[in-house]
Image 1 (tube, rainbow, N blue to C red):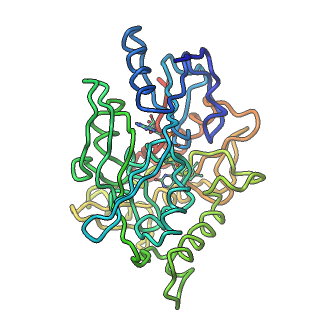
Image 2: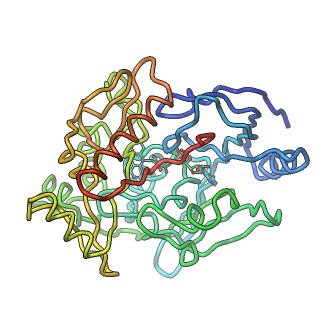
Image 3: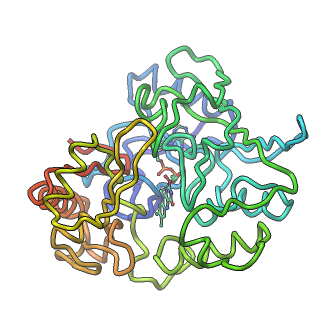
Length: 346
Ligand SMILES: Cc1cc2nc3c(=O)[nH]c(=O)nc-3n(C[C@H](O)[C@H](O)[C@H](O)COP(=O)(O)OP(=O)(O)OC[C@H]3O[C@@H](n4cnc5c(N)ncnc54)[C@H](O)[C@@H]3O)c2cc1C
């Protein structure tokens, strides 16, 4: 195993800021992942797992850890109980998996088209968009338990999936290294058409999976939410920087009252709480798309995306994010939580 030293992480993240990994290794198979864990354990060095770096903010001072970049590849499938179970290695690019499933006529992932990153990260924050979440299809997650050194096969039902959340993120961060994920898909199934933007784009049609994927990609490109637009001024981001807050019903009432707008977007949740729109709150707190503070700012096409421009540093991103949080809190009494993971940030 070749462990490199002081490897710049900025080029390995989509935000493109931050310092170096003290130690760095790329793991192309399970044995390499195990070896990396052993290396870190023996030296009492912290271990961090890197996928596509699309949900990650690395401190300017870097991260004092062994960063393991996951490069395990491969897909297999089998038919089971009238469905297709697709097992994918953690290092496969996510959108390639979606494209393959759509080409083969397997429904279940089509609305998740165009999301950057690798398969191994999809269960971590229960990746979701346009009416689907991976929790709808994850059968099991194969992970290396770094606490015991054992391989665990964790059933989807035991992953504690919630909105952009899972037990991996919430309860045991860093404990499991995802090696592979199995998704249960519907061969010949119809696309999911529950999200307003997707319904509008495909109105009056009975779209195929491929047409649904194409519509989602078009919508996403219009919001600079794909990485295939190289000249886009909004290119460097982590996607949405803030989660939509989920608050108690009474708090939602008070936020509505403070906004003075009875039409404030709000979505009742099954547990009685209410999900609010972070983008709406940010705009009503006085921010506008494209607004900049030096080398960082909001995307010109998506209020929730904080964008880094030439010369940006992580400190600038964090200061801007804090200003957004403070201003929203002062105006509405709700503190927005960031969606990305932070490395090396105090
Ligand atoms: C333009 C853009 C649009 C986006 N749109 C969406 C969207 O619509 N919906 C959505 O949910 N997200 C979206 N995201 C966020 C991001 O793409 C997803 O969260 C994605 O799953 C992150 O994958 P990654 O491989 O890049 O993870 P990384 O950023 O590398 O890592 C993220 C976290 O997961 C952990 N991790 C990664 N791989 C593993 C593994 N194998 N085992 C254990 N832990 C691991 C890391 O340690 C880290 O804590 C978007 C991001 C961008 C830049």
